[in-house]
Image (cartoon, rainbow, N blue to C red; front, side):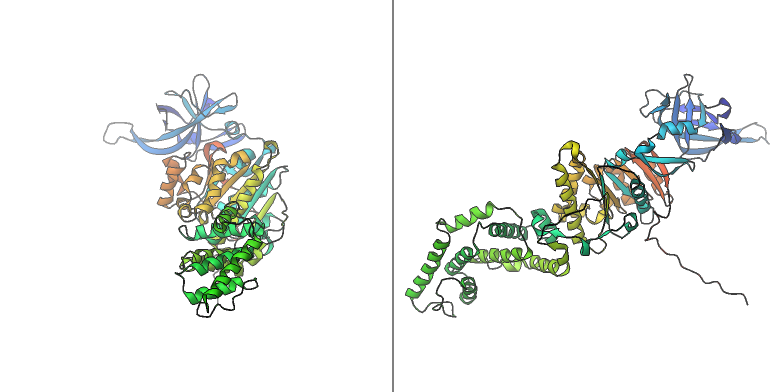
Length: 575
């Protein structure tokens, strides 16, 4: 119960967004009440204002000014020093409940007090059974995060290198691990190998994780191979559909090769010698006589040429009697196929078929335009072959899964994280609402794969994260993005976050970008971020209805394995 004896000042200015009061007795800033010792620290302090109806208004100090008061007008007159304090509104407490929407305000001369522990309990009250401890507020009040408010909204954890982001994540995950839940699953994409101690064993993605090739959709192939928009994406699409048609016996490879050989032969724009080499290769093993097809790309006589072409057509009709219009037949089979194929060999063979098909139409530069695509396929096959399999894969569904992606380059990182995220999103969206799990995707170094730049250069990769940001909540899939470069993050995704755990940020570009994309934060609060101590997070959003600074617990489980070492100096012995 607040005692009138503990008043530290009286209100002398009131507006809808701030109040001010003066402090003349500085000894009143320290006192004992109900066994608790209270003392003012200045800016960021919480204060309580009582009106005549005993309403408790809670404000937070954001500015303090020094003011001199002349005691006498004579030549040797003395001055009295007072503090003029400005504070912004938080809410009003009534019946031990805080309402953050003020419908009325304090009045002039209302007494001001330091906010006491009972009032903090009203402000920060959460059920211990449904929350986790995260740190300390005001050095003596333990702060807990409500799990539903923390995990069933998208969250951004932002701050410069060394500001404490990873410590905050480790504290949250280590506490969540202690709570028994039926439907909660955390997926941590560990870029710097910082979270392996949180689980019995993390997954070394390059050596212990496998992706079934047949599960890759078009956007997965695009993220993996990074084809160019104008030429290579259409070629890749056609190759995947062609490979799917052949895998599913819609098109017979022998019939298709016969058609390409026939089309190539009829294309007069193609170099005769090079054309012959391709045709001989396509017809090898088929019942077509090529003995009179000379090395110069011509026939010894017209009769042999006619027989050669007839043999091709007859063999094609034998293999596919219904394909009276071969080009229309091919188009129909390809367009009715999807993009799933069984192996990389199928993709390589299908690409070669597409190249030959284009060359038969006179497009002789198609292979040159696709050189980088072929190089990327070779690179993936050579360096990341173990990541892919043609066999079915069974996944364990652990409560906390840590994917060690520290060995992946930016391109493969984008592919892997988007693939896993999309798989989880699709799986959860196909489950009845009352049976859906809560899946939280914790994305470390998120600016590496959901950046504004990649929205333009790799839109297929960023699209799944934008989709989860917009629709994930109704399907039980949530993002927790961590980044040291807020200004590089996708504005679409950042604007969908409802919780922000902000650490020290000094870069003006980052601060300006955050002011435009984060609806929960004021300019004064942004300025405060530049001065936050390491290990302190500024929590705003659905976690609490008021922004608060929390000193995150730092224990053995939260100690960073990537902490910067210090120089060790050798002490010289005294002689």
